[in-house]
Length: 263
Image 1 (spheres, rainbow, N blue to C red):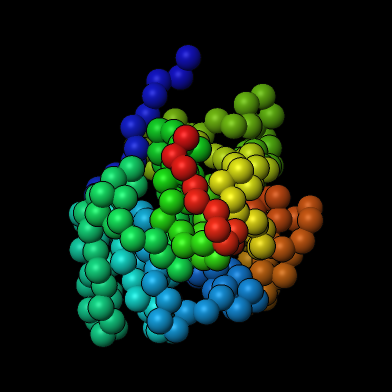
Image 2: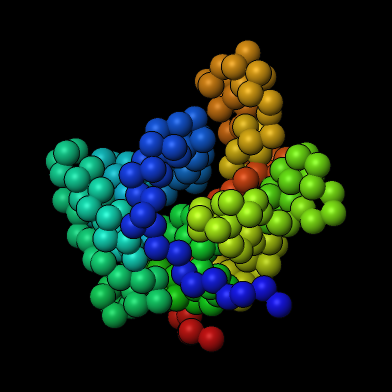
């Protein structure tokens, strides 16, 4: 039996994340994909109330704030919150922030919201699926849940391409020991089933970095970031390519009149 891993707190990696993810093509593709999904579905942002749960440094919620949304953000990492507060202040937008775990969110944010964000959080939790009813409670009827998580299928495919034929779900020992490898890749079909049971309808199902992560660096260099990003965005919403994304993004709308209950 594998040892149980606690929910991951990124106080120790906050600055590294800003440098090695958000300031790289990987991070820019992620933000571009999220933005395109919101645009394609015409989700209203002016005066929208947004709750970013596990919002980290707030890169995407800052984009929503720039389009007229009011953002509330919480995170288990005090260092991530500090960076988010700095970014919002530098951009001149208000941020209502709270230092708390996902499991405590209802204690600090008793209201429901037009849009709830939960990006790259589930895979770091001890019990990822138990978090979905908690997220569902925070969404207004008719509102939206933007859920991005580490994709089990994309992880397996990447490991197979690296020659890990006998145990493609494994992670590198170094990354696992450092706590820098997602501990629970998720099956998007199971996540969608759970969301359906909670009264949501998935309106956008995207794979993020379905091309980028599987391209050799020399191909990325030859084609250039703009062309690779454009192709990733195009194929990320198409079967079967979206299933190879390193991450999956769901935009799910809550049915009007539906009240979710914590299981």
